[in-house]
Image 1 (cartoon, rainbow, N blue to C red):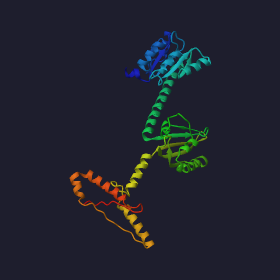
Image 2 (tube, rainbow, N blue to C red):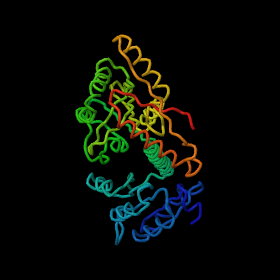
Image 3 (cartoon, rainbow, N blue to C red):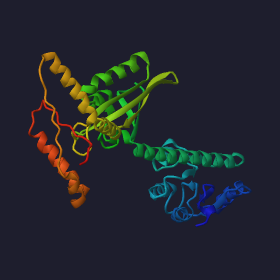
Image 4 (tube, helix red, strand yellow):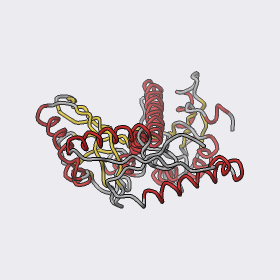
Length: 347
């Protein structure tokens, strides 16, 4: 297939009347359009598959396979939903027009055609269809980007209790996309009980005070998993109608990383024991408490003799495991109120 054949400016004319095909081709001649013809519905399907036209002008009344049947079959092709199909017919009854749209027609033209404006209308349909295709591509790209970023989108215009949501938002909620309606009440039930007040206050401020909000809360999925959500919602007017538009970002991994960083700011990464920083804070607190009670406390230093020989003989991975086991056994020997901390000195 050549580049011209697969371009959006290829037009397929389907009519059993050669005179009509000739007139259409003549009306569109002298332009950058690539014209191909078919004299039957069966041939139209073959030509469509071969050339992938951007627009098909399809006569309704043809012997054998008529235009309605042909249009329906074109739409069932793997690439049949991207191109425009215009039914050309002398039938102008409402039921005929309705049937044309039911089988997938983009538009229709009634015979006799007005040739001076025929070319302009064809170009308009081509341009409009190309715009729709670009929007569809952009929508798919946006959906993919949202999936990668774990970013869901929702909108509420208050006309109904139902939110308009992206597929990724359904997935964030642990739901199958578009399988059930998402409402305020339903969302509130999925918010973690400890975070519902935060969510309700933010939503109340948006509804009553028309204030945008930026909050974090947890969502409990249907399977019981808990995820952290960052919710940024804006309040705006669209043609005089107030609406909420929000994005939900899954920040669970970020929260876990923050918690891990915070944890290891005070705990040894190898033994999980309090590090020197936390030990000194707890020691100062214990000394102050002992002074207030006029009491005493004990401070013990424990070292592992010849630990360097273990590392040199068996390797550092064995030495690390020895430290972990020693830390666990020492913790099991003391009270919950006692503190066991890790030092950094190597013998």
